[in-house]
Length: 123
Image (cartoon, rainbow, N blue to C red; front, side, top):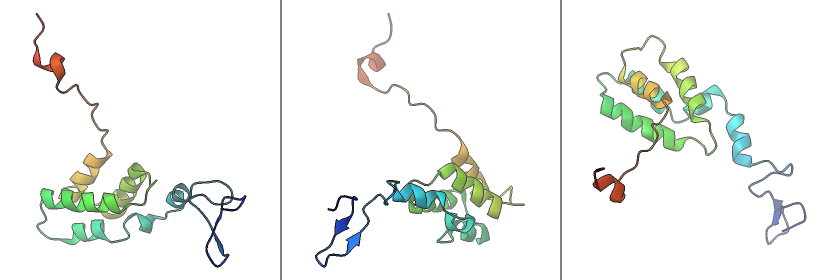
């Protein structure tokens, strides 16, 4: 590895590591540079809105697949808002609109589960 944080392959060519020369994380830089069309590169959300008779369960499955394909470091709230603005216009009753809207909700705080305190009632 050279002084600049670059790796050299066996032919002497130098490639970048996870960080570029400025020290910024490449994944974070790529996430910020995403355009509106990059938020649905496989067209999963677009196709979900085109399927007649799609169910809520199918939309949840598609949403999970879509969320897992987002690049690391992507702001999911921004991505959901972007695809909602692009595809959900005039589709208020569509199950995918419901799923995407649910995805914007804050996750509930975890509650204590188990342990002695959970099994024993106060006296």
